[in-house]
Image (cartoon, rainbow, N blue to C red; front, side, top):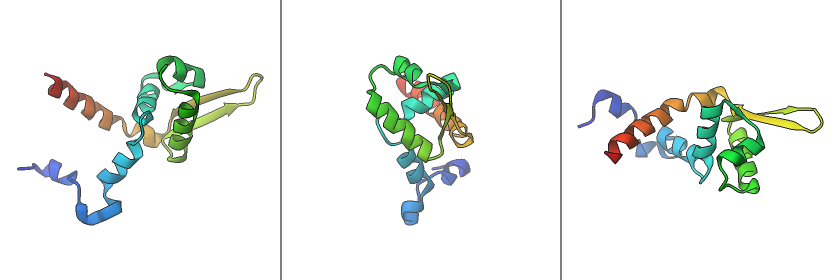
Length: 115
């Protein structure tokens, strides 16, 4: 039986597309989305090349696409410095930072699951 806190987060199939859990899962969908968010959590700000060093398996096109998508969703902020050469830094927005408890709980669950 679910506790009171657990009842707050159970999927509500009657809400359809407005279910908060469904929306969150859609936001985190994508092969590289959670990894990009994780890297920003661990490093505060990153440049494109730093992402590539931290995630060598990702292609330039996929990294660019993932960053644009997260920026469009308000999770990642892109700051462009008009210098030569051009410098761009990425960081988590307030909404992105507010996702960190989700990752902490996933880590806690994963540690228990792996025991």
